[in-house]
Length: 140
Image 1 (spheres, rainbow, N blue to C red):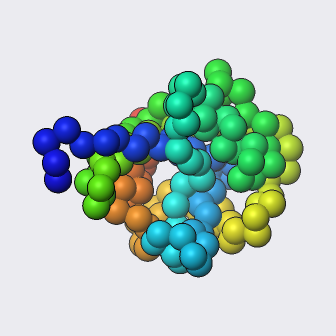
Image 2: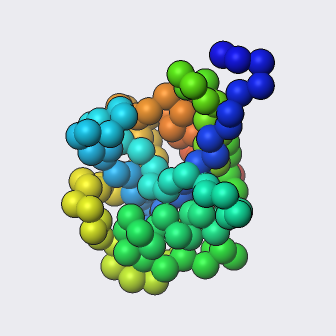
Image 3: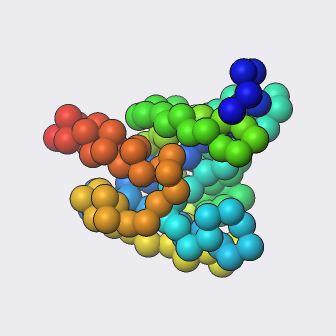
């Protein structure tokens, strides 16, 4: 990796339903890491905060409305990529408006946090599962 890498900031959400299950989505064919499960979210664009990017991405990817005060930072992961360095910021969210659906037809599933440990996930998402588990455990 070069001495001064280009950073890619990505904001993702652990959406948690009333039963305490977490929403994950399957990466589509034709994109990097197809078939792996990940937390929904996306790139932070120029001029956006991570929180505003996450609100935008959840509206685009899942057709829901989330307000910035309803997302709470949980953890982050740092992962070297071929030409950039990924910083993945994970937030948890318990409150949103609308029915979750994928306008792009991505496969979605709700799982207990324990089940996430066994899912095939991108390298940066996997370590966040442990941190999310800790965060949820300390809340109860």
